[in-house]
Image (cartoon, rainbow, N blue to C red):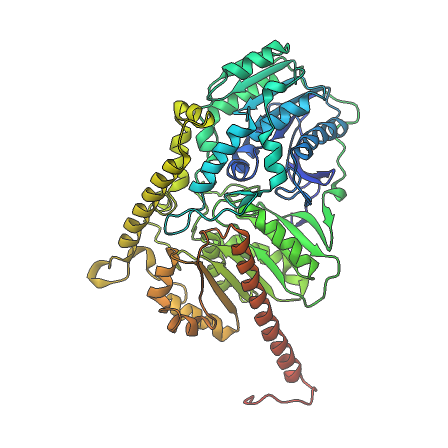
Length: 606
């Protein structure tokens, strides 16, 4: 099915309530589950496994709702994020699931900070069962951990950590403002006044203290370790489903559940009300192509010839983007009259799996998913532009080369023009962006975790070790990338592909076609080596071949996660929009001049 997603389009149904966006996974049982995901970067990493848990619960007979917190993912914007707003969102999700599905019992499952929100919401709601997965027991311990993560995720190419702005904390592009930090510092689950549920399952590296507190409040508590935690929240590229842990969650959620049967009224979902609106924009989910999911963002006042932008998935990040910047940028553009679609390639976020089961990064057929998105918007009438970073820039570049309907592309930190399928993808990524995977190893050590949350570990010392390892791995990778191939040929990873010849030839063909390209890099990014090898240096030959300066931005990370970096992305996109509009206007005038009976002639036309 192509177009807006309705209740009949998929097993999971997009829903909105109280300004929040979510997915309802229908089932016939009378026990419903609300999933309260982690917060910020951790939920971006856990997004796809979290969806897998929702599907498993629904398959076991539990109608299940997962949703984005206020100001996160695809939910409505916020003037200021507060903990109370997140707790209220959990309560709203519980009320929505009851009203929509008619379930008689409620299970709430929370991950990390979401588990804390779930426990606080349970004090005021009739929750039958509660699952706490590595909950944040004290906000101060959580902030210590997040400050470490801020120094180890999104490091600059030289290994240093991006500068933090005063009175805020940015972790993997996700910014927590002063008011939210104050709320977090005051969080402490030891202060719960009443049992948040009759039965609870607590899976965490450390369970003794919280289990005792919950038991004293009259809660029947089962406990256990959480060995799959590190693989779940450490890194969106290598995030994996903790199968055994999730099986225990599903077993606890369904324990003693009555056999499914007909329920009065069934599930009542109005598929026409599954979008959100804001100042200058309106959004709705779309399903298209081969199981692709995205969010279409339309301006209140659209011009017939206005451009439409396709935001291509970067890495394994869900369509809302690293730090949620894609959602924010799409809505700002809509306020300026520019429509967009942000979508997940197959194998990412909410789109279907790839048939081959491999990661979609640098996939040889990734351009086909982009072409399907072009099919979706091709009738809009205006120019079509692509925006993608790293592997998303790779898919965008190959789609631009193949599809003449595309008028231009902004490519952020394009790693290579052609990927050698003989290369080990996981190995290259770990060597290039190793700090997050090293941090994952830290999370696997329960003793280290306990020392960290007690404040016994020097964060700066850990950060410096991770930075040094990242620099050394990056140098080794670059040396291998630039080593000549057999008989002095191109390095294996930078070999030109068969379509259209070398990268320089393809770029030249794009310019002859009238397509506009903008290349934007963080200073020192590994992708600059490919540009220099195939297009020449910048300033110089590379700029002349591309038709615009290859822009290098100092002091920003690979994902352009900071506010300053995102401002540079917005500037580059505006420059591309101006260039494409000029070219589109020129072609329109030329087409009218060439039309029979126009009375005009074109210079050089025969």
